[in-house]
Amino acid sequence: MRDSSADNSCSSPRTPNLRQRRRSNEIPPEILKSNGTILLVNDKFKYKSMWIRAYSSLWMLAFVSLIIYMGHLYIWAMIVVIQIFMASELFNLLRRANQDKRLPKFKLLNWHFFFTAMLYVYGRILSQHLVNTVTSEKIFYRLVSNLIKYQMVICYFLYIAGFVWFILSLKKRYYKYQFGQYAWTHMILIVVFTQSAFTVANIFQGIFWFLFPALLIAMNDVAAYFFGFFFGKTPLIKLSPKKTWEGFIGASVATMIAAFTFANFLGRFQWLTCPRKDLSTGWLECDPDPIFKPEYIPMPEFISHWIPEKEIAVLPVQWHALWLGLFASIIAPFGGFFASGFKRAFKIKDFGDSIPGHGGFTDRMDCQMVMAVFVYIYHQSFVVQHDYSIDVLLDQIMRDLGFEEQLALYTKLGQILQERQLMHI
Image (cartoon, rainbow, N blue to C red; front, top):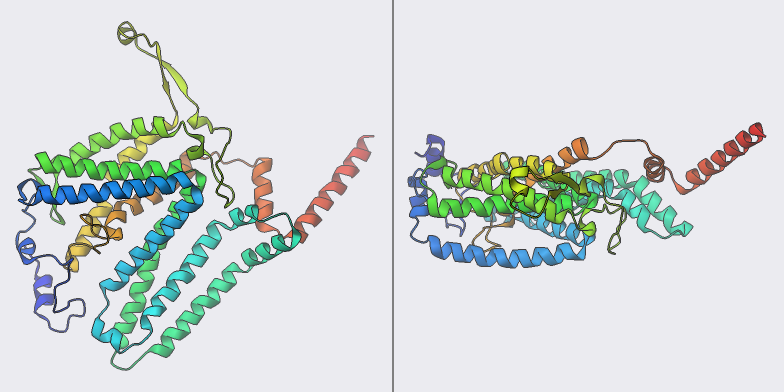
């Protein structure tokens, strides 16, 4: 059933969100009239779409695998590229060609705010990594320290410049459209940079905390597709017509099994589990975190009687993986449902057509956005050991103090140590 607000918007010739020509990602009328009853199992074109989707997935898997192999910095660069594609898709969602023609260079304002937000978010997240990367030469260290110190001021005035630019660009008869674009741009920045900030933070905590959750979402998506493809009979939610209970439940079970096994496999590679504290691209070696060191659990007698192994090696991270798998299979799909409702509100099938069989980059990142935030919060709350060790204090000093202030602090500490040594003589 189509709701009345959708009917009213279709009948209004002044609605700014619709165009006369149907876009390639617009929902066909037969889908809108179906009330979500066209299930994947009944789709006569399902095998063709499956092969297109599979072919694109293999290309994406190969590309992402190469990027992950190259290391943290390249993964971050990939996230930035994905952000740009997502922002472009979302910016275009409310654009009107006839209005943009009369507002020259107005599109540039969106990207001015986008790159200002990027400088602010990543500057805050990676400031310490940048300090650890520069050489020990005083001039470079001082330059980087000053950039970090005044980064917030620079970003603020860049934003103010965009704000003034927007005010000066206002034109009579286009006020509503321009303010709508201004608000829409800020909402996009919040959506895109909130999740990406957490994603980048996860990457530098260790590639494991980026790769493992992404694999869980991919596994859940693939399993839901195939369970729904072959067994789907019962519609799950009207917002997403082809989602079924069979696909949802089957994917949940498959994701939980994958979570336990993937964590054991990925957790054994140091270059995946070691945190990166600078912006270099070399391979990492570190003392593994205790959650990545195997623990041996004795096998029950009725099992060990039939197999030679008397105990099984389990990584502690596998128990954490079960909670991440539960979230990926039960909660994260609601990010996809939200995106489906959003697309139906705008009467489009996909946010874009950059990835054949999948839609746009935003279509692929809807569940990943929800998952990335949860993984960061879970990691900080239940995995990271919060202490005040010497290393932690030194990192804080390096982050907050400039070069001259650090020298003064170390000089003062040396004087205090000398005084205490003299007291004990």
